Amino acid sequence: RAELNAALEKAVNMEKHLAELNAAGLKKDAEAAVDGAVKAGKIPPALKDTYVALCSTKEGMATFADIVAKTPAIVDGKAQAPETPPPAAGVVSLCSEDEAVAKAMGYSVTEYRKMKEAGK
Image 1 (tube, rainbow, N blue to C red):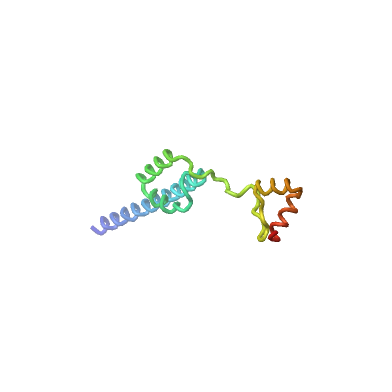
Image 2 (cartoon, rainbow, N blue to C red):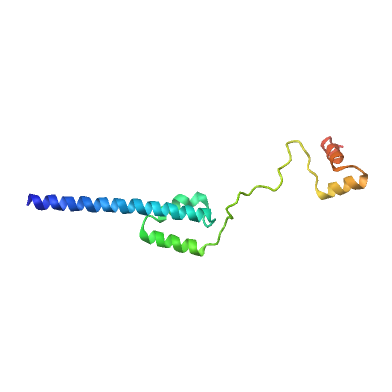
């Protein structure tokens, strides 16, 4: 009877160890899948942990794959920086109308900007 209990305990421990290995592998797969969806712009980075949690089971992974397949890219993945840097503090920017006024008055854009900065 002691041998049977020892064998049973060993089997339970092996099953537990196998479950832990499967969970670790599933988590690694889930993180890779979610990282890929973030890079593709399908999900926002702020929801990464939520989707990794969803993928903690095989059914969750299937659900996540379905969501990603049906979701269009919501972010293009590129940094959204302005094409031109903003003006420095205290520097007046001119719109196209201001530039037209400067030209009509015979001033350069730089001269007109300086006059506006001076409050004239």
